[in-house]
Every structure is written in C-alpha cells, then in structure tokens.
Image (cartoon, rainbow, N blue to C red; front, side, top):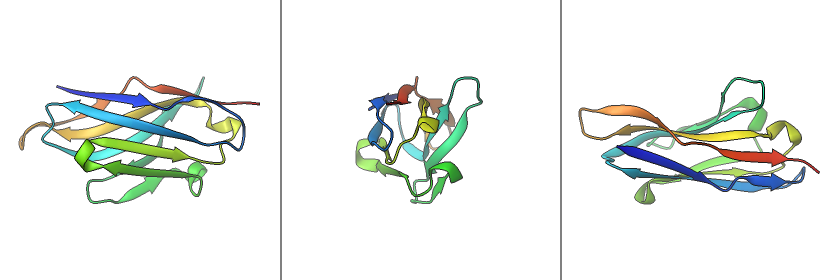
Length: 120
C-alpha cells in the first residue's frame, strides 16, 4: 500500500517559519493531488493547501500570502512552507494524497500528522 510520513513540525514563536515535508512511499503508480490539512483542538479538520499533479494550487483564505505548497514529483514528496506564523496556526497538520496504485486503482491516503505549535 501507500504510506505518507510528515516531518518538520514543532514549536515556533509568533512570526516565525516552519517547513513541513510529506514523503510518500509504497506501491505508487502516480500521485494526483497532494495536500495539507490541519485540525486545531476542538475544531474540525480543514484544508490548508493542495496542489495537483499539473501544478494547480488552492489555499485556504487564512493562509494565503503566508504559506506556500510545493511538490517534488521525482521524490514523491510534498512541502508546506509556513511563514509569519501566528497562534491561530497551532494545529496538527496532516498530509493527504490521492494516489493511483495502478492505472485502474486510486485512493485517498493520510499521514499520521505532525504538531505545529505557535507560542511565545
């Protein structure tokens, strides 16, 4: 199957930056959409950003201008550069990918999440 492993979370002061990575491995034929979602305590999981295999990008309004999503297709890895972080960005960040494991089979896969805490 497919595994997604996030890294790069941690504690950062307001105004700081972090870069999250999501490495996909396993039986991958192609990765269609890669994205980042987050879930803050007591809130529902929400989309942060996503990027298609063709390079189309969507951002949540709350992160536009501060976060940048990218991917390295050769490495099956996605990235989320987060700048100007504020306490409202504190959440567990999850990597998501819609992966084709054959030309006939595709599915949604999730990482286990990485905690981002923005606090002074």
